[in-house]
Structures are given as structure tokens and as C-alpha cells.
Length: 212
Image 1 (spheres, rainbow, N blue to C red):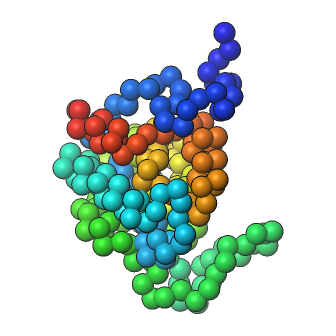
Image 2: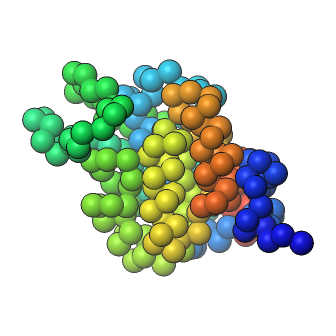
Image 3: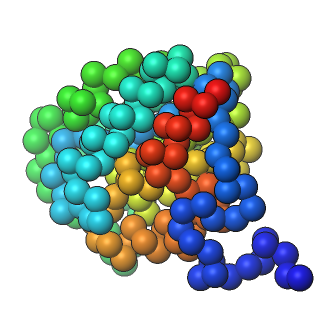
């Protein structure tokens, strides 16, 4: 029988992928990381989950983690006024950069109102590289991270990749994440994330957290 490690991604569903179908989360060693749920990203044409859905599900996760006494990390992307801390390598499809309003990096009110143990400002896609996120999580004895936010195939996926390489177990909150196109979200969720993480719904994550 072929190993699941080499099974085609097409053969597995996006939710409940792999061998460990039942999700178990220890509130003492699990952290929620919410990525870039801020005014600038929420103004983009998000799909398949609209801005309201992402905010509602992310806020629900945050409240559940708060109630369980689990760690919550809120991450946003921000740049200096002169923009000199942005990445500037030549690429074929650069991210469009216009004049950003002053509140572009402000978290959605529903997210900002959560009780956060860790607040991270990043300058690129991933939340670990160049920040103290790993330090803050390890000081709290965290070994598992639940990640959601915007955009699925950019900030969320990159943070998941970094977390896995740092030896964290990763869970992706599928319906608390979205991108700028159904195809971009689906490709990440169905083809990439199952190799990095367990992909679950907000309902499944909250139930697993409360079961402890």
C-alpha cells in the first residue's frame, strides 16, 4: 500500500486531510496567530470568504482562545513612512503599491478588541522571519499554532511554512482565511497546506479547544 506521505493531493479532501482526522488542541501549548486582518487587506476583493466572514470567524477563534486561557498573537503588516523597509527585489509580478491611507495597517475593530498576548508588526509575508514571534511563543512553551487571516496563499501560507520549519505543529483555519481569488485560496488550501498542516474549519478548531 502506498504511503500517505506520497499520496496525490488530489486524492484527499481539503478538510480532515491525512491520517490525523480528529483534532486535539491543548490550550496551554497552542497559540492562535491571526495574520493581517487589517483595514488595508480587508478592502481587497476577497474570496471565497468575504471580509465579513473572515472577521467573524477570526474573532470567534480569538474569543474561544481567550476563554480557554490560550495564547493569542495578532499580526499586521506595516511599513515606515518613507517605505524604505519594504522588500524591493525585481520580480515579474510585483505587488501593486499605491498611496496607503494612514489607517491601512490598523486591525479590524473586532480583532483589535481581542485580548492579545503577543502583537507583531511585520514587513513582509511571513510573521516569523525578522520578528520576535518565535521567541514569544517558545517562552510560553507553545508547540502548536492555529493560523488564519489574509491572504491565504501569501501571509498565511508563508507563516505556516516558517512555523513548520521551526518545528511547530500547524493548523490552518480555512474559513478564517481568504485571498484575492477563489483559485488562489483553493490551490493553497487543497494542494499546499495539507503538506504543511492540518486544515480545519472554525467550528472544528473551537470544538477541539473546548474539549480539553
